[in-house]
Length: 251
Length: 251
Image (cartoon, rainbow over all chains, first blue to last red; front, top):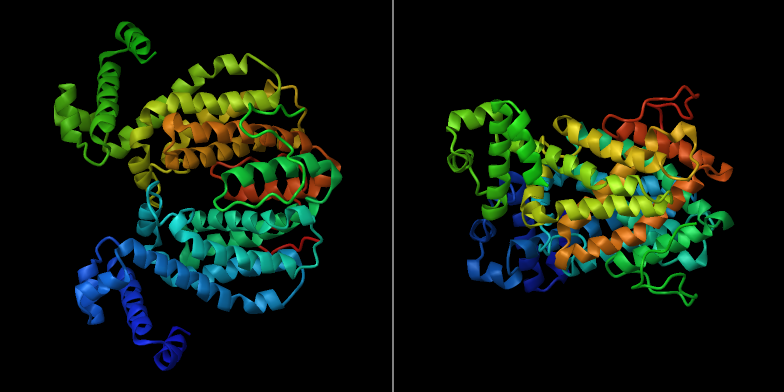
């Protein structure tokens, strides 16, 4: 698939795009072979056959290369997940398919994911999936969850339309965290977690329409709106709490 | 409070316990002053006025010192949280108090928490809060959540008695992760998150008794039982799923 994409680019993409792709693919290969920390921009440039100055022109630093990796991963996931999104309308099956496909796509990078995660975990790092720099990859991932939900036969509250895909993405981030720690062969344990958790997520989403849960759903909505990056825009309803004041007592 | 604890130890504790405490306190001070990565066992021994061999006798490595830090933090939290556990019976107020008290107790260590977290995040690290090595600190933390719940006026399902405190601890770990990333003054943002999330947690626990939620609660119970370290023991009920088989479809 990577090869095909490259072939297409060789016909259509301008030279600069070709060079950018070459540098990124070389970097990803070296990250896998040598590890992220041990791979320098100099080594990447040398291996790609470009000048160091040229490499820096396309990617100002290694972090920027990782953003390119995030974008690539998101694009590969979007392509690979299409059969799932076009398939079964059962939400649990769809959520399971979306997450298992992500594990498939990410598997080749698992070996360096752990050391790599140390950098992404730094509070000041642009590599954090929550950073402003990661917005493109994040939006791409959230849109997959939106299509997963929209194509299902589960009825959801229109008020939660913006929020649920973000929440599903947050669950995916939890899975990624678990996956980084996963040392089982072919990350079998992460796959098992998806098998088990997808029906729970689907059921919780289906239940979110129930009247008895409405106050809870509102509270969750408000706190996610406040704390998630690029959070859901208010959807015109009355605010259910006064931000900036003390904690509301749960009765 | 640290000073009082030390005074007591000077009267009662045997020499070996005094030495152990001295080494641990010296290490924590150096971690704060110089950072975790830059502090060597040699420097700790020197600063504590003991031989390097002696330091290694009590703590086989820096990781072991961090386990001592976890235990200390758990003990300080247990002491500081007592007024909360003896106070208001409202579950949201109690959960809020437990978590805010943890933020108070942990605040002095926040500066080195970020770099420190990089080590704890390593999949192979005994410093992970989920590791076998961290079992003592984990059990201590879970028991605080158990007392938080048991002393509240919220009625809960006896079947969930083992599980809920573990779940509350898992939420605490989520808070710790957020707190590590938090760069606001006095980790104000983390405090705000506690104010907002505690009522949600309390409400969710109160709702977990509702009949309509029973299948969801069972599923969550089963998956936590499978994936949480030292998970809740089965409580005699019939299993609600067949472990080891494929995913169960949520209807």
